[in-house]
Amino acid sequence: MSKIFEEQWMDLQSGLISLCLEAVGKPVDKVFAYASIEENKKSFNAFFESGGQILTLRQLGVPSSFIRRFLTEGVKDLGKLEALCNASDRPCPFEMKMIYNAKTGSFDADYQYESVCGADKSITSAEVFRAWMDSMAPSQ
Image 1 (cartoon, rainbow, N blue to C red):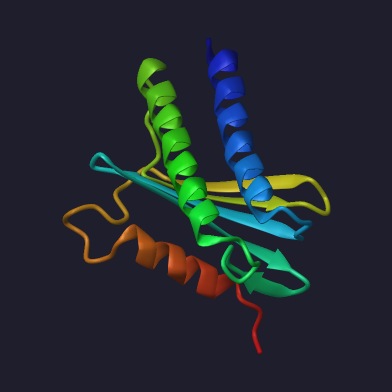
Image 2: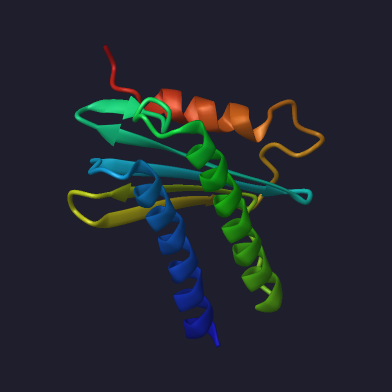
C-alpha cells in the first residue's frame, strides 16, 4: 500500500512540474512550483530560472488567458494530491515548494505540515510565493 501511495504521490508531483514546463513552452534551467493547501483554500503558482534570471510566466511571454488556465489546472491537481492523502490516511502538507532542475533532471521538494498562511496567520499564499521567488533571485 505504501509503495502505491508513493508512486501516485510522485506521479502527481511530476504532473505539476510537467504542467509548468508545458506552460512555459520553451527550455528553462529550473522550475520552482509552489502549492498551498490550507482550510479548503488551494493555490498554485510557479516561477522559473532561465539564463541566470528568475522569471514569471508573464515575463516569459505566456498569454494571460493561458496563465489563468495553468493556475486553474494546478489547483485541480492539488485537489488530487489532497484526495490521495485523505484516501491513504496520510497527512497532506499545507505547503509544498518543488524545484526541478531541467539541466540535470533532479527534483527536490520541501513540505510543511503546519499551517503557513491559514486564517490565523497574517500572510497570504501569494505573499509566501512572492517571498520565495524574491529569495531565489541572484544577488546583484
